[in-house]
Structures are given as structure tokens and as C-alpha cells.
Image (cartoon, rainbow, N blue to C red; front, top):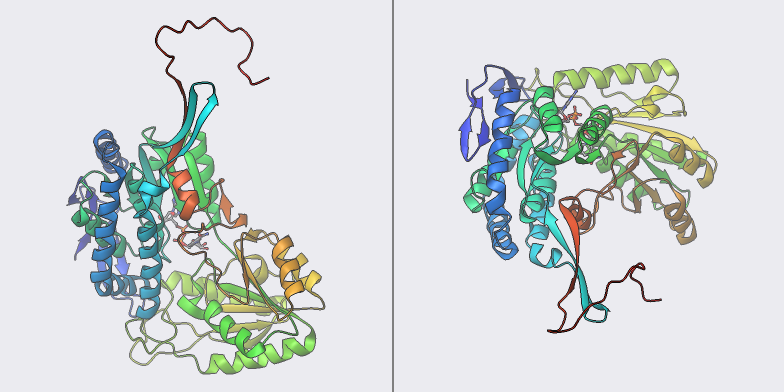
Length: 498
Ligand code: NAD
């Protein structure tokens, strides 16, 4: 059986005995074993990154940028290979994998501008003969810990910018589908990143906890579920690190009675069921204003669901592939059972569906709950599967109150033709990313990404301008070169312009 190893100092290795199998979600066939790094192995990766830092930080930003240009080119030329690896282990449909990878490449494109992004801020003559400026210096060794659901894109949110800013990096991808991240890191080395500047360790909690407690690691970026995000944030900050940790979500779409309902419904279909609902920006709740509108929306959704094509992710004719694991499928099914017990109306039941030729896969049809109410577990929890809940309300304010009271605050959207309602919604809703007639308002690479409330721990958002700030330390220098022979007298009052 193939072993998916670590990449440390430019070499593949797996010195530890602990391993775990990786499965093809369409068949549950065992594909490989992934090595699970021990503390000692992670320490080896950190030591390599630490040793590579002094010379890497001296490389001019323009040269680091050229490596990013080459990486972008290599990613584009190897896109089919990356996506095949990704789909084989994750299950998402190839076209969807291609979209994910493209979003990742856009982060590399943004990192290509790092000489401009690191220019700093200059103030001449802050006092007679005195100039002051801020520059943005790298931190040292940074670490990234990433989830299963975006195996290519989320690592690309992190290490290209960290490295372009002059840091060195240790990545710990999801142990459920690590191959795409490992292959992309190797493309990074091929693009010219020196061995040791970028390292990958595969593993589980032991690897993560080593990264969180080793004093040589300066900063940690995490993306995953909320309980782990909270653990990463509290442990990392208690150990003196800069930490940004992005957690789970429950994203609501508000459907106003004046919306273009055909467009709203097709948007909801993609946003709720694309990637089997395994997206932190998936829409999992539609809050529909008015009973008449809700009846139409539920009827149209049910009809659209009956046309969904579900099957192996390698076949681009499918809309939805399998869930990543049997365990997740069982968890989602138990949420569906609980929703029924709680009194929600299961308008479409996707359980028990069979894909011919893939009887052993983790397939689950699309599920639609109607008349879901606040307080039900299917509304409170992130299900992370193909389950859309419809809630019926009488007003926009009622919809907004439900959204604001929810523990998560990642994304939301509103479907309406009323500009005043849309503006009121985006001004006041307590959510980090808002769409107006846009179902998945995932910011582009030159903005930044981040939710509010229990969807994010830490200050700065992911990628875009915030990532330049996250992966650098501001240093402000004030300078005077007195003219020769000028005698300066001692000043005992605080320097000011008064
Ligand atoms: P997860 O929290 O189980 O795992 C994420 C990472 O943490 C993995 O690398 C894993 O090895 C590690 N990990 C898991 N348990 C750990 C523990 N007890 N201690 C230390 N490390 C641990 O998440 P997942 O199931 O891989 O991903 C799905 C979750 O990620 C969902 O909740 C989804 O909403 C969230 N997510 C959030 C965003 C965002 O930007 N907010 C983006 C993508 C995914």
C-alpha cells in the first residue's frame, strides 16, 4: 500500500510507525495510508524551517514574487492532475475541484504582487530633519492547519503569501485527503522555493498540538470546525503565537417576496447542494418571508432536486458526488432523523439513494426540510451535508433576528429587487460576508475572507490584504541625521509639535 509521506527539507519521508488509511469516497476502496507525524517528526520540520529562515528573509521580495509567478504557471499546467488527486480522495465533482483550484491560484496571483504589498509607509519631515517609516518584516516560522473540504484552496490561502512575505512554513493538511496539498507543495519547490522553506507534515492532533506549543513557531493559521478552531486559538495564543482560526458555519439566505424566485431557487440549489454541502459558505438555511413565497420556493426546490445528478465525482455530468466519509454520511443521516423527530417537515428525503455501480460509496441524495424553527438541532448545528432547511417568517426583521441570534456568523445573502431592503440588510446583519443576490459571497483573492461570532477566532481575516498583515510584523523607524557640527541640547519634555 502506498504511504503518503511528509515533505521535510525537500525530501519525502515517513519515519513514524503510525499511519491511517485514505479511502475513495465513491467506492470506499482503500487508496493509500497516510503517515501520522509524531512530535519528533514535526519538530524536525520546524527545525528545518527555522534553519532556512535567516537566508530566506534576505531574498529580495521581487525574487520571491518570481517564484510565485512560476508556481502559478505550474499549477495551471498541472491542474488536471491536482484535481484528479483531489476528487479521488475528497469526492467532489472534477469541475467543482477545478473551481476550487482556480480560487487557490488567484491567491498565488495576489502573492505575485508582494513587492508592492510590502512597500511600507513613509512620512518625510515628521519634525525638522526627521523622517519616519513603517516596514513589514516577516515573523519567522509560520504554520498552517487545514480542513478536508478544500484540500487545495485553503493551503493556498496560507503558505504562498506567508512565504512571499519572507517567512518559512510548516503545513499540516487534513489527514483525510492530503495528496493534493502535498503535490502542490512539491510544485512550490519545483517553482524555486528552497527546500526547508516550505515543509508538509501529515498527521492528526499530535502534529497540530506540537505546532501549537513549539516556541519556534511564531504564527498559526487554522481552518476547520469551531471546537478545534477554539482549541487552536486558545492553545496557540497561550503559547505566545499570533493565531487566526476560522471555524464552522450555518449560512442563511433570506428570500424576499419580491425576489426573482427562479433565480433565487437555482442559486439556492448550487449553494446548498454543491460539493454535497461540504462548504463553510454553503447555504444551509433559506429564510423565506411570507407563506405564499415559501410555498413557491419549496415546490420549486423539490422539483429541481428531482433533476439532480448524483454520482462519482470523476464524471463531470454529475452535480454532486459522495460525502467524504462513511462516518460523515452517517452523521448527516442522524441529523435528518433528528429533524423529523423535532417536527420539521422533510419535504425531500435523500436517504437510501443508490448510485448504480457504486453501491458501497458514501452517496446521499439532497434533503429538504420545511417549517424548521429556531431551537431545533437541525437549525442550531452545522450539518455539513446536503441538507437545506426552510424557515418561514413574516418580515425581513424577523429573518434578520434569527440570523443575528445564531452562534455562527460566516456568510449570508438576501434575494430581493428592493435596494432599500438590501442596504438595510447588509448594513445591520451581524455576519462577516454578505451577498446581495449572490449566493456564495466568498471574497475574491484581493479582498479578505472571514466570518464573525463563532466562525472566527482572532483578528485578521484570511488571505488578501489582511494576510499580508498577518504574516508580517510592523516595525516603525524614526530617523535623523544631524547636519555635521550641529550641537543637540538635551530635551526633557516629551517630543511634540506643541
Ligand atoms: P476539523 O476541525 O475536523 O479538522 C481541521 C484540521 O484540524 C485538520 O487538519 C485536522 O487534522 C485537525 N484536527 C482535527 N481534530 C483536532 C483536534 N482535536 N486537535 C487538533 N487538531 C485537530 O475540520 P474538517 O472536518 O476537516 O473540516 C470541516 C470544517 O471546517 C467545517 O466545520 C467547516 O465549516 C470548516 N471550514 C471553515 C472554513 C472557514 O473559512 N471558516 C473553511 C473551510 C472549512
